[in-house]
Length: 287
Image (cartoon, rainbow, N blue to C red; front, top):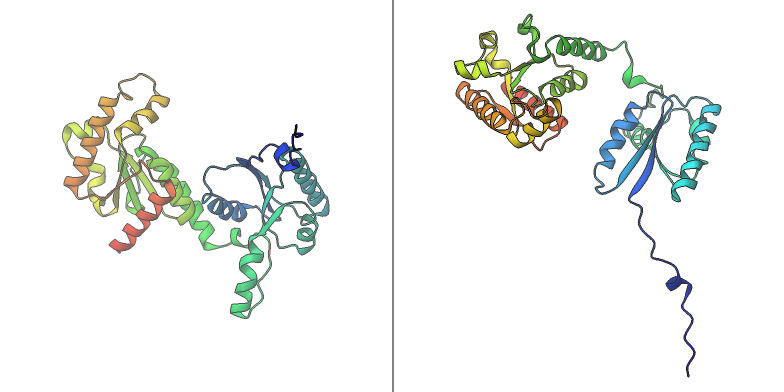
């Protein structure tokens, strides 16, 4: 009788399972805002992976680099796979220390600045936090725009609307506030937002306050089913959140915007970033 053949080591071992999660470090000797913003844009292209994020801003000394390396080793031992590290490092000494870790390193400044230096024939400033310097006019404009957006959120104030760059209208909880804040923070636009309420639909016209600023008006709309879910979290089982109320208000708002010639954007399946860019394009087309 033949003896059973011994299975190879390959067959004795269970199939290796591809990890569904990875740990990513955002590391910078500055604020880390650039590393995180660009890094998240890259990671968004990889669906089905849960990225556990760890932030290490202001890694500007050997001691902080050692601490960061220690955390990388802990993650490597815990996960059984090396972490990803997205960096924006101007300090070459600290950068070299960090690269001793067992990780995939992507230094965004190294990737982009070196080719730009070669193309432009000029050495970069290599200054930490230069893109976020507080002395710049752009920074000052963004702060002023944020203050304006907060003061003119949800129709709280109609004063000074003549100085608004854009006024968003739409039913309650359709995303006007976060879109206004994003336009202010990222683009320095003075964005106000104004809710369309049942009284407006009963009169079947825009609030008088907004009539002088038609050229600045843009609308947001949303699928009633999604609006229902959002409102349910805020006021469960209320008439405000009822699906029939949501359908009625969305239909009335879209009808009003159509009659008034207001361009509107559907936020149901689009991110705030996408909607903001579309609004910017619409503003530019009006100019």
